[in-house]
Image (cartoon, rainbow, N blue to C red):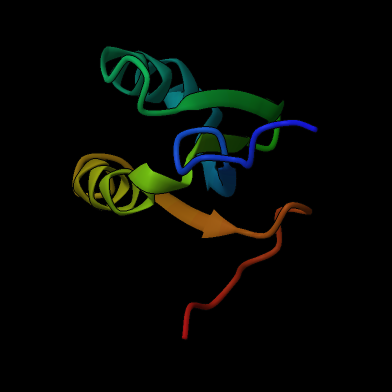
Amino acid sequence: MGQPASKYTETGSRYYKLANRDIVYLKSILEAYEGLNTMSAIDGKRGLIRVSFPLCFAGDVEALMQEIAKEIEIAEVTKEGEPCSKP
């Protein structure tokens, strides 16, 4: 039997939409936080990206994305790129 998943191996993902010209800028910022997250472009033309992270860092990723949103226009969206609302 395998080991139970730890808080470091369980992952989550969030999707964001931003201007496609800002994708490289965002990726460079996120990569500076090595081990915190990974970013993938889902649809570069539409500016749709996925940020994946260990669940133990969910709060850190949320705080980082809020700070980045002060510099560039970025919005959390669904996997399909539709606007989402947080409770």
